[in-house]
Length: 497
Image (cartoon, rainbow, N blue to C red; front, side, top):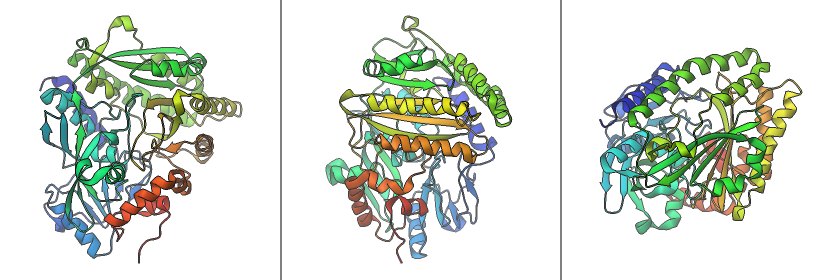
């Protein structure tokens, strides 16, 4: 391995995330349908979702996938596909058949002439990034921060990173291999099937079939200059347009009850990397140990003494790293995109808000709505948000069900709170619902993988785009094999007889 410490750290953290946490899916394999595990209890990573499917399947042979689909169809059962289990919404659970795709985790092919990679859907986005950079000197132009989500999951839910002129992860897709509801394999491309079909497949919520592989558009590997720093929060938001449009990639964080916010900017540069891969791996390990021990200890204290929230938030803000442009911190994009590899279990809600013609007025409103509510609730002795307010800035998407569809540019704004047991207490959940209504009033649409309360409004939010998607869904899955209770509610459909 080119960077052994980085890879070792990544695998150690992954081991903890998947096996030492008392949740997750089973660690078993089956060579055929007969060996699917029955009545297995599945939990998502955050612990707020659970399911007991009649058949929990984790195949190693791709030929078993259509067999599972046909078995479910013939029995009048549903099929849902899962990857890393990092969603907060019940997009995956079913009591029928669940298929874990994480054994399908390799690169199938790379077209160096066209800079295309075809990858199995169960490969983690972080593993893909590392392999692309090390073996092929390629990169994706945008990535999710979390390296542990699977490629198929990131595509199906329209996940995103940051980058004002970049779309979502799904918009990198130029081709896809899918197992349909009749058990057949079909390869879809823009050239052979047109943009309409691809715009349905790019963000499908798993409702069109099993994504087995995707072909993603890559670019030659590039470096990013990284600047982290604190600035006055009010000044930052008042001048957010200049900040965002002056850099290739921008993220802004605010820990409640702080006068300053934390800003990350990344800009493409032809300069060579100054950050060694060994140092990057050491930093990951150090951050992991800090979060999993000291950070967890402090956040657990908040469960018993919420009034400590302002003090701890100020301390966390103080801990955020800083460096200046003159420090010349430059690293490969694959390391920069996945700057955080360790996470506490939190409650997370994210909405995508349009930025028309570079007008950031609604972004400022959405940000200030959170700040004002946090401060007002403090006066009542309530602290519903004890983690960051976080914004990222991207372009738009052509996918019918992407929360950024139809936008000029998009602010992806999210609020997080540590809760320790999967969901916030009821009075704190009311806070999330209030913020959600504020953001919906600004035209926002929710991230499909994070907390959503106004599920019944989603069909109207998407309007004609939802209608186009549902028409294609009906053509590909007329018997509703790939549906579950959440999708019936989203699509406002009734189960077929």
